[in-house]
Amino acid sequence: MDRGNPEEILRQIKSAEQINSKNARGRLKIFFGYAAGVGKTYAMLEAAHEAKRAGIDVVCGYIEPQQRLATTALLSGLEILPLKKGTYHGITLSELDVDKVLERRPQLVLVDELAHTNAGFCRHQKRMQDIEELLRAGINVYTSVNVQHIESLNDKVAAITEVIVRERIPDELFDRADQVELVDIEPEELLERLQAGKIYRNPEKALNGFFTRENLTALREIALRRMAERVSRRESSSQVPIDEHILIGLSSSPTNANVIRTAARLAAAFNGRFTALFVEPPGYANMLPEDKNRLRENTRLAVSLGAKVATAYGEDVVWQIAEYVKQAKVSKVVLGRSTTKKPFWSRSRSFSERLIELVPRLDIYVIPDRNSTEYVPDRHLVQRRELSLQGVKHTGIVAASLLASTLLGVALRSLFGNEMNGEVVLLLYTLVALVPAIFTDSWVYSLLASAGSVLLFNFMFSEPLYTFEVYDAGYPITFTVLF
Image (cartoon, rainbow, N blue to C red; front, top):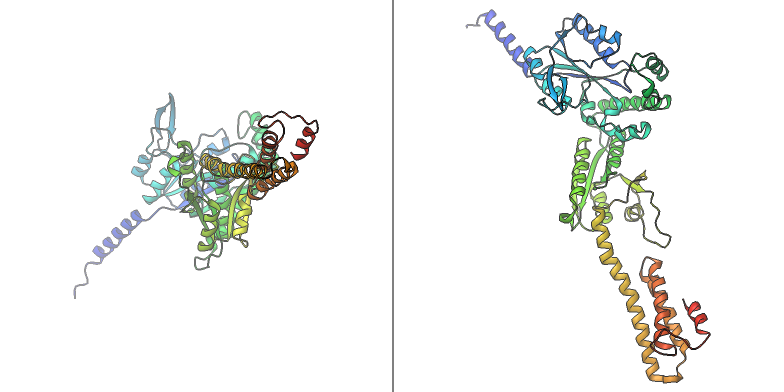
């Protein structure tokens, strides 16, 4: 039997290995820090030199221009690919040239600043999309990112630093990375480096703003916790049953993003499922365009943070969420809370109070925000419905009570004439004020009924009739007591 030429078989094996190597997805390593200047790029360049000494083909695709001499010195001895240059808004910029990297096809490429937004002349809007293309081509990538650029931590960092970071990466990308190396130094050492001009040439503005000891300590703690969460997620077995199910309500509220990010962190901490439920109201088609845009943005954010989006239909949002909680076996619900105080006469229950009543054993996490409002599918639609339904209904109760008492008083007067005691009519109108207190949810309607009772008694049953004048000097006191 012909066993074939051994050299030909070896050539075929090597050819197959090269094909598999080209088709294999590259590996991603992220150098992760809590602030600029902790040494992410320096650590990445050191790792590149180690890889080169190990015989790996390494090139620099893009390294952020540095004023730090020690970091710049590490570029020596590494191949640096040309950058893609172009003009954007009248400014000449340099970006990663993806085509040059694909043409060169190294084993490992260094691409700094993972969360960077590309200039308009680039193929992709975000640098992470450039990196994704390189990974699909089988090229390994080293990159860097700071904690404030991770989507689920954005609002938390903004609350600490009072700086809103616009360039963000999805948590999934961070967690999916093959390796993440935390680059960490003490905040005191970072401040010393900043004051020495090793991070920025003019450090005064940074020292008075973002780079304070309190901010850096808090950011460092967040970064350490996020690393611990990542390790916990990757080590957890997929066979372990998921007991926790976290739910949030999607809305068009500007602060809904804060609730989504909090729920995503909670789902990650409990290693649970994450669902975002949108309750579509009957008047959804009439929702304002800006509210629809915010709803779409909040939906995209929830999906990027790993949420499964579900939709229910109905006017009673609380009831719909309660039913979904029961059917989907939700264990925890995250809600936003308004700090706006209700009027003292209002007896309406809050969203969370109604939800607790419908699902007593549910864990509810309420996220305070001074700019937030109670969760509603559309604030304007709900306000219009309340005015048109509850307002008309409760005003009708007051009007019907006043009309019934007046008609009964007129009937009694026609039956008994002058022999009828006016105190009987006064008692009728006193009872009228109790009806709104029982059948409405606001004291305003009781006050309205009281004022209406006084005016109608004066007009219909006090001399002279059918005027608001009075002959008896004691009537003003009677009216006051009646009111």
